[in-house]
Amino acid sequence: MITFEPTEEQRMMRDTVADFVKSKLRPRVREVEAARALPDDLREGLVELGLGGLATPEAHGGAGVSARTAVLVEEELGFGDAGAAYAIPGPGHLAHALVELADEAQRARFFTPFASDATRVGALAWSEARPCRERPGFSTVARRDGDAWVLSGKKSYVLGAGRASTYVVFAQVDEAAGWDGIGAFVVDAGAAGLRAGARYDTVGLDAAAFGELTLDDVRVADADRLLGGESFRLATLRMFARQSLVAAARAVGVGRAAFELARAFADERKAFGKPIGHFQSIAFLLADRLMDVDGARGLVWRAAWTLDTEAERATKKAGGPLEVVARCAEAFAEASEVALRCGEDGIQIHGGAGYVRDVLAEKFFRDARQLALLAPSATTSDQLFAALALGAPLDASTVLPTPEIQPIFT
Ligand SMILES: Cc1cc2nc3c(=O)[nH]c(=O)nc-3n(C[C@H](O)[C@H](O)[C@H](O)COP(=O)(O)OP(=O)(O)OC[C@H]3O[C@@H](n4cnc5c(N)ncnc54)[C@H](O)[C@@H]3O)c2cc1C
Image 1 (cartoon, rainbow, N blue to C red):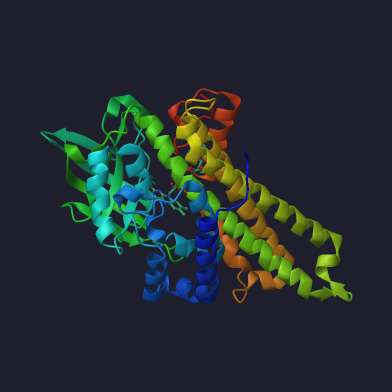
Image 2 (cartoon, rainbow, N blue to C red):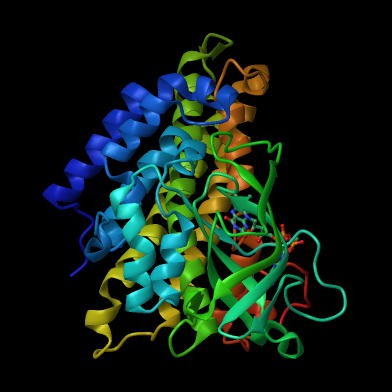
């Protein structure tokens, strides 16, 4: 049975977060932006609502909410301030890596410190601004040394770099095997040889910090390597699927925020004696963007439902483990484009007011712009969904957000 009706518990969680956003977060968006961080009281308020542990399983001290509940809440956070959403302490992207790539003992070990310290931050280091020129794969390498690995290289655009206590770092473990020779390691921020560089000066998502991570012969025990169960590549894809589902829900929130602001302006601003929203060229823009937001939300909810129900449907007719990957890629590809369209039209509808910082229209556009670049980016998600939908072969360049641009459908 298909139902779009939230349960009582889901409604309560969503409304609680929406109230917090409306009364506490939104009025201080510009302050957060100027500080480029969450002020202490806002951060504590968001942590108290349990929002740092949404992706952490209940058994490991997290909120243990379903993906359907999570996307309802994430949309509200995106509506409030997507940058603030990415600045809430907690395991963050690390949680998705542990859920998909770690074994049970590793999960227990690495989630435990987050359960007892709500200020702790986790991060994931995948991207590299300087790709390897000599061979396919990461330029960051992990070389075996006895019962440990030694990691060297530089990772880029790491959300939470410098703030995180624990990182999952992806590196090349077999240099001859290209993208099939990559591995993942849990690295403590205090490890000798690990350095976080200065944060980037980004155009949006101001409360969140992105930076570089340098690894100079960092030793990591073999027990801290995440193997990803039966298929490392599938587990990595599913990790990115979970990450992009969160981003998709936040993008729907950004799109809705830009739409609502533009709609209110179009009601209020008059030209030739009537609200500008009564002119078809504005009304059609607004209606199209509303259809966009509603449609993207539907894809996000379906992806969340696919994730929540895949185990119970495994014995019936279900699409296998790649179904979740396809649905999340589809949801993110669409939601991120919708957020961008809403952001851009929001500025257009505001006229000159859309381009000055007194009005939030320009902020929503900047946040949407940056969300579409998150790993896996909107273009990578498009390509992944196209491959899955059209049955193209899934080679590494098609399915992984790679640090080098590779031919499509090789
Ligand atoms: C908000 C935000 C948060 C981020 N968080 C993190 C993080 O926590 N950890 C982390 O490691 N990185 C993070 N990133 C970086 C992000 O993963 C990369 O920017 C993204 O994967 C694109 O990689 P690139 O910048 O190296 O671009 P390039 O790889 O140089 O790509 C350039 C363009 O080509 C496209 N492209 C590249 N490869 C493919 C492919 N295989 N299929 C289709 N298109 C492709 C890209 O999408 C992009 O449009 C974040 C970025 C942003 C903006």
